Image 1 (cartoon, rainbow over the protein chains, first blue to last red):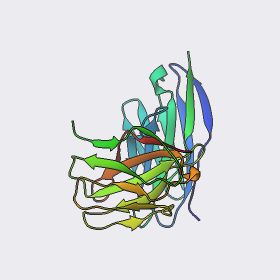
Image 2 (image 1 turned 120 degrees about the horizontal axis):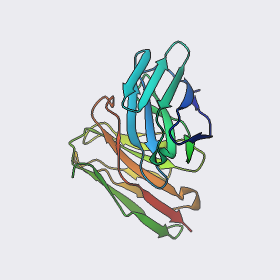
Image 3 (image 1 turned 90 degrees about the vertical axis):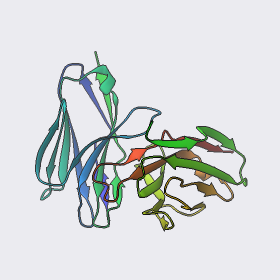
Length: 109
Length: 113
């Protein structure tokens, strides 16, 4: 079956770095997305990886290893506004999205 | 402002009633989607449409129907609501291959009592 695994909750300190891991199993693969979702709001697109390696976008970076079925989202210089859920999403061979349940990130001062 | 508009924002609905959730986008995206989000679960796809005039079933289509008469509108209808349909519903759209990510509406919080 198709599956996404990511931690349910993580806690980090303002100004620090946090890495949110994700493993996936899909029927074929057409890329891996990360979304941010603040409580009570819609998900917003953060990143897309389809090739192995690291993609950097400001304070956020996303890494993919296709051979390991593994991705991580790295958040640097954490700010209080980064408190949110982070959703790992894989796209299968039919271009359908498989959504993880999300990692709730709590930032403490 | 370009994006997706959903209505209503929230609704309390009696079981057995019919309800249509509205979704309109102004980005000329070909593909549109309806998801439900429940606590502790990933978003689950209800129905999708790859282009105007076509629709398809997602992971959890039972009890729901959609139509796609034009590019902009993608309403979701609950023919006879049941309490298990209590959820937050998100409409989304994407360009043809979705590699630029999906754009989501602000969601409809539906409670069926």
